[in-house]
Length: 104
Image (tube, rainbow, N blue to C red):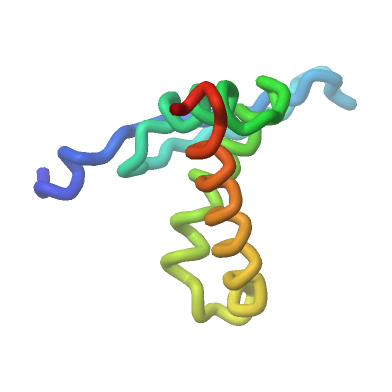
């Protein structure tokens, strides 16, 4: 195992269809590695973002899924115009969380 992998956290995402149109609900499951501790990010967002807990959880997960893909493909035509907006959003989010009264 490489040194890089020892510093990464592994996660499994499972999405299950709650109201299936057929007798068998659809399920998607995948695993991913992340250098960040996803649970710490979610807890920090829940406490310091001003968002409801469910929203903070969804934002935390989605950003850790999307962010690394955007960074790895920042010159891809699908993402090139979006990158400046994503960067601004991430800076605003980080500053908001840092300035929160519960984070001082």
